[in-house]
Amino acid sequence: MEPPEDVSPLVEGDAAVIEESLDHPEAFAALYDRYAPAIHRYAARRLGSGAADDITADTFLAAFRARARFDPGRTSARPWLYGIAANLIGRHRRAEVRGLRALARTGVDPVAHSWVDEADDRIAAQAAHAPLAGALAQLATGDRHVLLLVAWADLTYAEVAEALGIPVGTVRSRLSRARRKVREAVGSDPHSPHDAPEAATHG
Image (cartoon, rainbow, N blue to C red; front, side):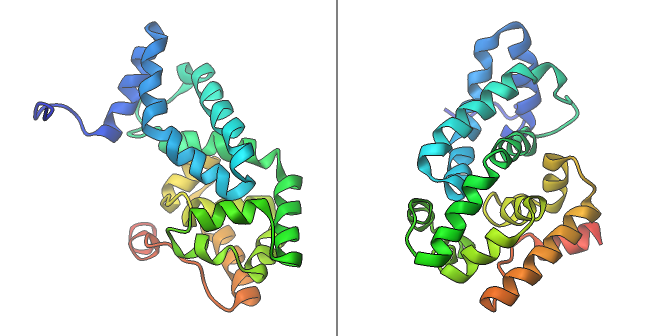
């Protein structure tokens, strides 16, 4: 059944869902249904499918506990949720780097398998290549967060800035630095379809 014409678009409904959940906690499940699959895919690409289950559960638990602090002026909870997930993934930095280095060294790693399974964009497909894995392992955590939020989570520069709590200019500088290192390692630039519009929007 089609929703009435005066119903707000899905992304504009996130704040309303969160506000309703303050009095009716079960309403928060709608946010989980909307975003959990994408958060799980992103976590699986970075840490493997096993860790992704915990990252996803912990992301929504943390979001539920912090929902009263969500800015109702935001049109979407997506950057907020990815920011929580990125923070949780950051706590597994050593495991992520270990997996990337293992892939770079041997070409075989459980995390690589999850990347190949989810190879529905260029960087995910290329992640099975040892040089790219090595380059990602060498990135600073903040630079890796920015690169992969753009390339794998498909966030715009503004959304990455919101997710990580940093200025858009910092997103640009981190992304530029990360891309330079990746280009040096694999001879190509994993870019996002958001590049052109973002350059126009934020330039």
